Length: 238
Image (cartoon, rainbow, N blue to C red; front, side):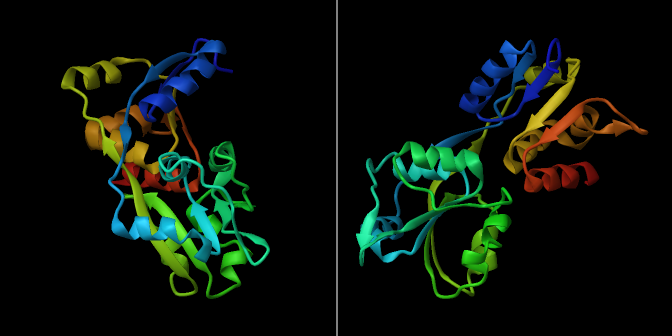
């Protein structure tokens, strides 16, 4: 399936490296294009207060693996907090990748959304058909905020920024070299990756790389999740 195919990866450096290793073993020729990097942000007073009062929350919600890493990792062990004989707060996540990261820190995951998106998590019955829950929501600075926007009138959501993304800028020579390659497949794992490549290449070159001529598509484009696919469609229409 991947043998001798040239595949463009558009994640952060570490994400590209891990996936390139897997694809390389299957015979692919991988181009690692670092779209952005993740950076921690100084903890705000709001975040510090939330961390000192975790036992008052009903749920912690993680909508990405990075949110879990940047919240749990720096503060060390964050074991379950007991209240009234039960274990609180419960943990809800978007998708199996986020669940895997949360479990790697020794936390139990009570809910994995059936649809791997923030909207999908917000539509789960435990949030959609209840009211008055207190939810701790650590997130990226540039997060779309769908979970919070959909549920803010039903529940009390404490939203705190724990990390940010910084787009990586490439030289003109690097961009021209990329456009000269005979790429078979492009993989986008997040809306941010789509936006990063679009911003760097510009409308014409982006369309040249991942668009189509007539009814013939130059390359196969793969996206992870409906939100990433929607972002790609928006860029191609612009």
